[in-house]
Structure formats: structure tokens, C-alpha cells
Amino acid sequence: MVDPLDVPDDDYPSQESKGKRVLHAGSNEMKPQTGNHIVPIARSGLKRVVRLLPLILLATMTLLFASGDVQAQQPTLPGIQVGVTPAQGSGDIAVTIQILLLLTVLTLAPSILIMTTSFIRIVIAFHFLRQALGTQSLPPNQLIVGLALFLTMFIMYPVLTDIYENAWQPYSEQEITLADAWGEAQAPIKAFMLAHTREKDLQLFVEMSNIDQPDTPAELPMRVVIPGFIISEMRVGFQIGFLIYMPMLIVDMVVASVLMSMGMMMLPPIMISLPFKLLLFVLVDGWYLVVQSLVESFR
Image (spheres, rainbow, N blue to C red):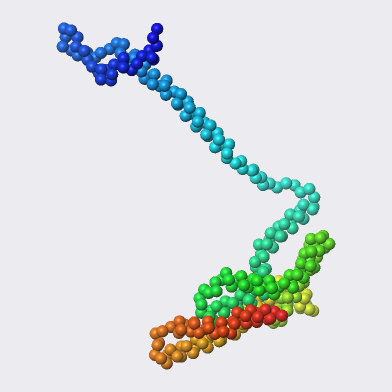
């Protein structure tokens, strides 16, 4: 028996013959051709599907293996759980409170650094210097703040060393408690602030806080010392800014008078005086003098 799938395609009628009509004898009517011609056509299509079946299976297996490799390469993420568990003792609660206090101090560290050190006076003087020179945004704010921070670290080094030796190091070795370490750390910073604070400013906040007059300034609380120190430093910073501004103002006035006498009233004096102010500042070694004066003002 011959398999119908092995029959060549040429033995089957073409697509053109499917629509042919045959003329029956004794009749003028054209009738469609029917019978066994439909079966070979269906077998021919089935034969083509059977031939393509291995290719379809191969493509499907390739896609499955590729998707499996992609899923295998994806990294697994660790699970994160946040919860509240009962404390095993009073020590766990104390450690938790200490961590919260440490995070609070770290959050307020920039304000503590600015308001309780020499940073206030230095940064005010540098800003007045830039305004007096008329250089607009030169030096930039980042440079001014960076220089002020390093000068602050230089000036506050003895105070920081005292805090480290008398407060932090004994506390880290568990020789003193946290309250004792806090008291030891307050003493040098309070002494520094009191040394550069006017009595008039301290008296102002003592009266506004409604506390008893202490025997010595060292007995004042920090909530009185810190604001008194801030306004005292701002006052000194403005005084230094005035002294810096005066030479530059004289240069501006001289240049403006010369331009007026020459009839150049439409020419901005700042445009002509800026090179002369820069030349004067460089010739007298202005940065050396300003930094030296600022550092020695804390000695």
C-alpha cells in the first residue's frame, strides 16, 4: 500500500484546477468538480505541517531553556524585617536611649559646630572682605566656608583635645558614666565661650531667663552662655568687617572723585576701582593679614 503522504505534489491538482467546472454531456450547465480531489489537497497541507513540526519543537525548547537561564541569573534579594521586641532587661532600654541621643546630637552637629565655636566670627569677616573687594561671587561660598571650617578646627584644637582626653576617652574605657562625660565635655567649651563673651550679653540672658545671679560665670547654664556667645561673636565680626571695608571704601571714593573731575559721570566707578583694590590687597598680602588677625583675636 502506498502512503498518501508520500505522493508527490505534482500528482495532485493545482489550485487553478480546483475551481474548474466540467461540462456534462447532454447539458449546458457547468457543474463544480467534486469527489476524491479534496482528499489529496488536505493530505498535502498535512504533509507540510509534519515537515515543519520538528522546527517548531526546536524553537519552543530553545525559548524555554533561555527563559530558565534568565530566571536563574536573577539575584535573590534579602528580606528585611522591622519589628519591636520586648527588652530583656534595663540595659537594653538604656542602650536604645543612648542611640537615640547620639542620633539627635549628630543631627544638630552642624548647628553646634557653628554656634559654639569661632566659626561665626571667621565667616562674617570673610563675607565682609568679599563685599569690600567687590568681586561678587569670588571667592565662592564653598571656599569661604571650607577655609572658615579649617581655621575653626585650628583654633578649637586645644578645646577638642581637652574634651577627648577628659571626657571621651574615659567614657569609652567605661571609667566614667555618660553624665560625668557630658559634664567633662561641657567644661572646656563653656570656658572658651565665656572667654569671648561680654558680661553685658550674659547679663541680658540671665535677666530674661529669670534665674538667680550666680557667683561665678562658670555656674551659668549652657542655655544662657550659648546665645550670649553668639551675639558677642556677631558684634566682633561686624567690627572686623568695618575695619576691612574702610581701605576699600577710600579707594572707591578716590576713583569716583577722579572720574567726576574728568567728566566721566557715565562710567561706573566700581569698574575702575576693582583692579586697584585687588592690586592693593595683593601688595599688602591681605589674606595673610586677615587670617593672622582672626586667629590672634582668639588668643
